[in-house]
Image 1 (cartoon, rainbow, N blue to C red):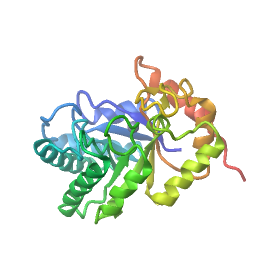
Image 2: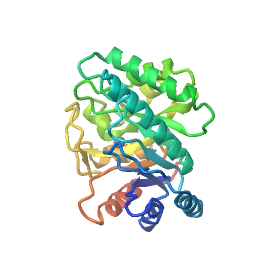
Image 3: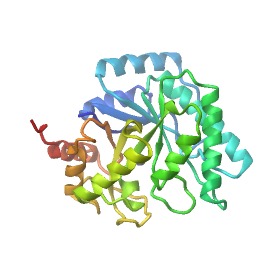
Length: 284
Ligand SMILES: [Zn+2]
């Protein structure tokens, strides 16, 4: 199973691969720069070369890059909107340079405007990014959100509406975050609910669009709109839900990235081993 965690890039960006390998990741996610600052120093050629060598050797796949937290592709504020598009383009370019398979992004918030406005705004932003950049192989994955306020992407039909309005939408996919999904009202604690979710993804977007799972338990209860990740099995989704989800036929081959809390050194190791322990051999 392709399973990993979000890894720090502190020091040199290529050190993230050593960190991922050291804890047994077979997939990984990084930021390509500080996700909370607009100022981004360019990637050095040597660092990129070493990064790619290490990535190839490690056999880690896929490499996922997450965009900056400051990006808001649905913003009604002209300045922030333009800045967000530029910053998104830069994240896309950097992820591509590093050999990433996926760039995961949050869509953003339409603030005091309605969801329809935000959907149109985000579609326009993605159209302008992809128009200049049709030839990249990397896929952009829109991540579902926990759904507080006017943050777009808490129902899958919003992600469908954006995907349908983007011309080069072969480059778009879905990253489903289990914590966000649960907080926004998608139950994952029993098989019927999981089946229902899979049906919804399939009927709205098609299963081909689902490319990645962010595997996180949730501190908040079902429909709470609270975006707080918890260790696998220790939150409101609970261990049974994860066991059913990761062994489901439609999910088995999906790469999974943990974004669970990291207070102690061993936290990632523990969560990875919990997930691996839930995995059942394929039915014959
Ligand atoms: Zn996530």
